[in-house]
Structures are given as structure tokens and as C-alpha cells.
View 1 (cartoon, rainbow, N blue to C red):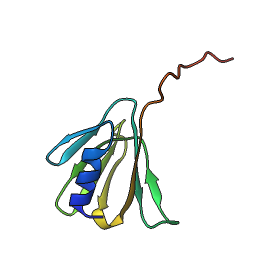
View 2: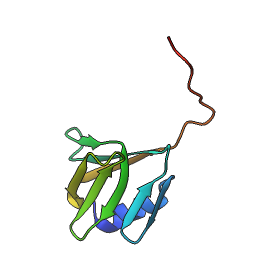
View 3: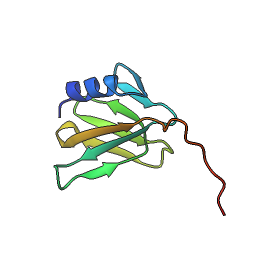
View 4: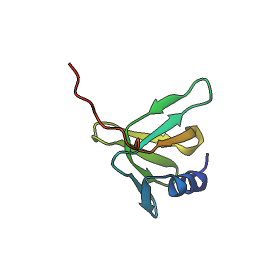
Length: 93
């Protein structure tokens, strides 16, 4: 993947807001970046932001405990899941 393609994907993704090179994921939305090749990919989940740099993308987890620096060539898939509509949490025992 190239920087331009990733920027285009993030700009079109629901729940992703960004300007220039920084994209933030809205509360309730889930963004996952798959790194590697099909069948051998690692997933970076619970993404809170992506910062597009010259030769790599900086992927930050929502809780900021994980920061991954990934070459554009290694990004294979970006998946976004919007919040579930009408689903409320039920009390459990």
C-alpha cells in the first residue's frame, strides 16, 4: 500500500476524521490495521489514531500503550467497524 492509498482509505472510512497527515478514530468505532501478507498478517486493533509520515505510518492504540511504526508496503488491510445500533448492555450475573 502507498501513503496516498492509505490516506484515501482513512478519509473515506466511517468514523475517521482527519486533516493532512493525522487521522483520529471516533468513539465507538473500531479500526484495525492488518500488517503483513494475506495468511501471514498481524492485526493492530483498538486503533485510536494514525499519523502518516514520509515512509511509514504511526499507529497508536486508543489507550496509548501501543505505538507501532509500520512501512506502507506492509499494510495490507484497514477495517473499520461502526458502533452497533440499538445494542444496550445487559446486566449479567
